Image 1: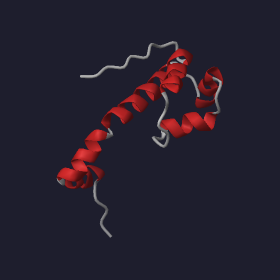
Image 2: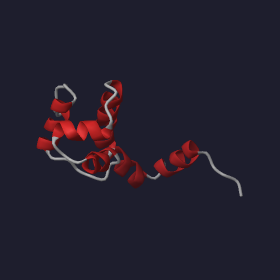
Image 3: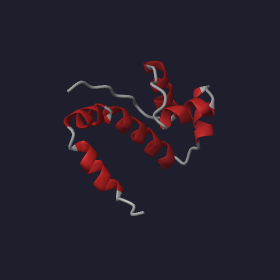
Length: 92
């Protein structure tokens, strides 16, 4: 059995306009998740420690970072505060 390269499969799937549209619509969500993970790692903070600072459970933070939870604005404000960061929301 020959294994295909992920980028090859991704390129093939994104050639479908409907798949591409759905993929692009998820971009902002995953950009936000990536920025929070990056900031947490930069500050050398575990999920457990960040959750404790936020007053929530590690499992809630894990669900968010895995993309399985749509956070409220209040949740995002707690994340930003716990990371000593500023939350900015913009429409372009």
